[in-house]
Amino acid sequence: MPARRSPWLDDRSALLVRLLGEVHGLKVTEDCVRDDISDHLDYVAKRMRIGRQAAKVYVTDEAIAQMADRIAFEVFHRSEPNGPPSLRVVK
Image (cartoon, rainbow, N blue to C red; front, side, top):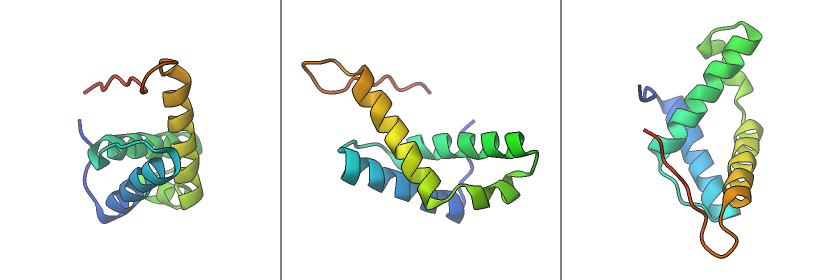
């Protein structure tokens, strides 16, 4: 199920898309990263045993920047040595 749209999630998604593009040279859609951020929010809420709304304060700009770094590392780590990164999008 796709992540629900909200102003908070839209802002976080826009930040992640911008960081991936500007810092790491990766182009992704907001819909793609929205699901990742929503999943991360669920993970934080579950680990801390709090609700999604309360977990939002822990998904900071710094946490989003760390997500961008992890995504970029995996993309480049798994890419072919003599070509562009190959990604498989799962829907």
